[in-house]
Length: 369
Image 1 (cartoon, rainbow, N blue to C red):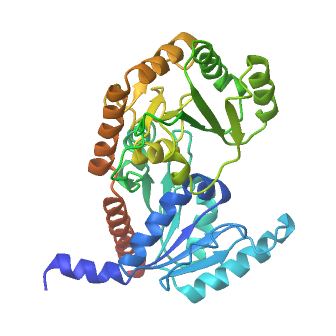
Image 2: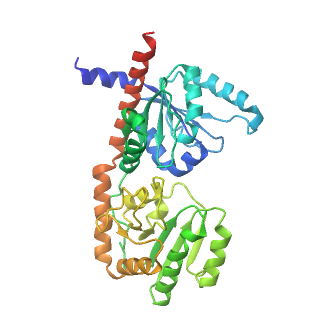
Image 3: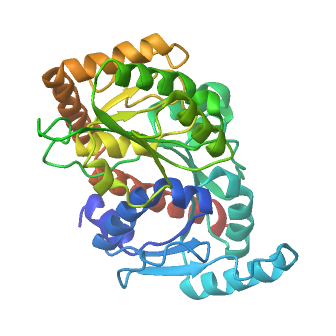
């Protein structure tokens, strides 16, 4: 039997535990679902460790086991919570622990040491500072090229452990952008409401477009400490009748399918999964370069504006509304880019390969002792 066949058989027997916190689950619910589906299709047994209120719909297959952590929502019981989780994982017998959030990497290292297994950790931001144990951390998985490049430059000691796996999604056959001239244009923003300054230029530009007679409806999806300030700003700008604020809903895909234009109101220092989803359904993305902007290729897969310049935002959105066929072609180009570079099958196969390498690395460096 050849080596590739041996490796395929070996990887199919992998048992992986994926550690999720509330933030990673909220941000990447759809991508996590794609990963679990792909792992199940490959007959790879997977456990997901997540907060109690999350992930109830993810144990959809006999190959997927859901574990709640913490079992008790009381900080003083952290030792008991860890003991309960360890007992469940000992019964599951994972080969590899995948920490989906860098903020949990120290906890992942502790669990990995207790189980005598390796762990891998995902990073999706240039601000991530994962705990990297020389003895137990097999790989650091970058979510996109810009994060990968940043870590190689700023943390060269990590370079040998870095693995690039583009976060991915499925792409719709149809293109949502201006697919019907008879419907009202739908504009969508998905973003935490943490800082009102992130939204002021965009909302001012929206106001001027409305004054100029453009007809549309804007949905702002999210929540945060600045929500009441945003609501007051909308009222002062006279936008309350065309702007709707709604909380984050997962999955978002069905909502995004009904929109035409997706606005990224400011630069992101963390991979933005909502841009990925918006492009996948065929919305045109109006965003800003800088930070994590791998998906935003100017006038190829997205249109670009200066987030601090109201006139730049206005003229960019006006161009989209006036040149609908041009805008629709950019949306189609973005879908083509996702099919080529951000496929779910490639993401899953890359992860399985990394898990297999992690197990082999750990066996070679520990079991021989």
